[in-house]
Amino acid sequence: MKIGIDCRLWDETGVGRYIRNLILNLQKLDQENEYALFVLSKDCNQVISHLSSLNFHLVKADVRWHTLEEQLKLPQILNRENLDLVHFPYFSVPIFYNRPFVVTIHDLIIHHFPTGQASTLPFPIYSLKLLGYKFVMNQVARKAKKIIVPLICVKEDLVNTLKVSGDKIVVTYEGVNLNGKLKMNPSASSGEKSQFKIKNYFLYVGNAYPHKNLERLLQAFSILISKYPSVSLVMVGKEDYFYKRLKDKVRKLGLVKNVSFLKHVNDKELSDLYRSAKALISPSLMEGFGLPALEAMANKCLVLASDIPALKETCGDAALYFNPLSIDELAGKLRIVTSHTTEYGGLEELKKRGVERARKFSWRKMAKETLKVYESCFSL
Image 1 (cartoon, rainbow, N blue to C red):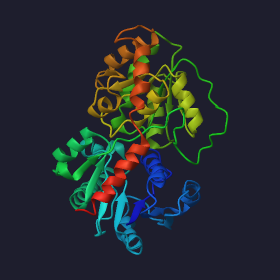
Image 2: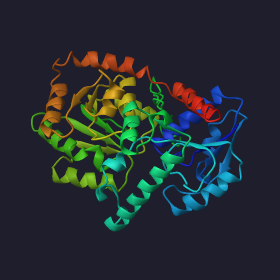
Image 3: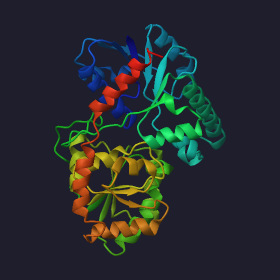
Image 4: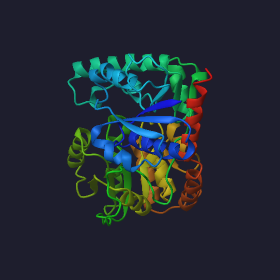
């Protein structure tokens, strides 16, 4: 087979990490099929540095996602390669591409949180793009040979929301790199010494979109420092409009001395941040997987997680859960950790469970199951 994989999001967090680990492990698993990796020119050198197999080659595809050009130009680029199958590891698929493909749908968050607060666009334009997204998503779900999702609860959401047959959906759990080898952003230097000297802190890792529920986290943290003023909150994420808006909220709440924002964090630094934190906080209202929570557990870091289906499926019995809509309940969990009480079976016991839980998730297993999905498409 000649299989194409859309790698245009290679250098992004989240989906980019999924793509990078998929490619790294497919090379070890499959020397029979031929792979064409569609990449942005700016990422070519990074992708090449990750390739060690002769059956993988690059095809430049300088087309941005979520654009009209993606719908019109990308199918032409794909068709020139005469592919037997394409894997789109993200829902942004050209609806005019009519050859066999599989798609990974990580979540339906935009379906459930369709708010202009999650966009820098004027609301009328955002509303049009939202309609476009839903149209594309429905077309993609209908036309795909198979749909890959990271969790059972995401599969159930697709069945209920998009009315997709469950037989068409395959769950492949994502992985985690243990021992601090997080494989985050390949362009980040992992040889530098840690530039952060912060102590006595809680940690948040991720973006600042509205569904991440960070304003409630800040309000709960404000309650905590009224009793424990020396505690800090470290927030790791990409500097963008949403983080700038969050910084304004920090100033309004008078938390500037207690809240730090870090960007350009390399793999070694992130691992160190996990290991030294009092706990990672995952307060989301909805998630597709919850990779930071899994990374934290792999690095012996306690996890405080909202009691939503995705995080409960990922973390199992290895996290301290709270109602994400209750600021007081989250503040209470922060106090428990800060005061070192031994409620809920003991915090150290939760850390041990976390390490064992993380061992059950493997990028290699994810790639192996994805390869089976590719092969199944030729028996359909």
